[in-house]
Length: 257
Image (cartoon, rainbow, N blue to C red; front, top):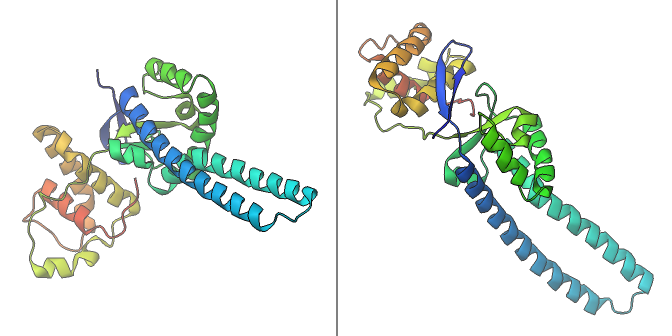
């Protein structure tokens, strides 16, 4: 059975997220692991070629120099492997709004409790704990924790205060057509909206396809009522839903989610 979580924003508007299941999360990890192994094998082959070439050129060096150079190279290799297999997750989740290549492929995203975007600290915490989880039966403990958790959380999620959700696509196809005058003045129309209001509008448009007609109309009415007075035009000819789709499309300074 699919699990969902309701998140209330500061504007008293609630969104429902579908939690990522055990299967999709492990498929995402498998994709990321395949990428990491491919990079490691390629780097390893290049390293061996370089080592043999260096040995051939420096065969006259002293034994001590060779041992020292080998120790330095081994240290660099160990650090590089660590960064590849754990820094990989931290970097992608932090810089790409909670999505590694594997998560992107499976349509998943990591967010903080409350639906907030993942920050650097949370990305580090959840992936440092990943090292411990990996050591206990290759994520076996993680699988048990996710099955027992009402929010499908592994230990890293519990420590960092994060959840993994299914990522709805940002829809623009149903946006109404506007004349050139409106298009030219788009920046001015949305200039007075705060970052929180821009983010709220964008999140509504991303998830509107998953809402029934009744809840969609109610939610669109709540959000539109708050932003209409701040727009640079009345837009009386647009319904609430069409207005929000238009504003989301004109948002030049979106808040990453």
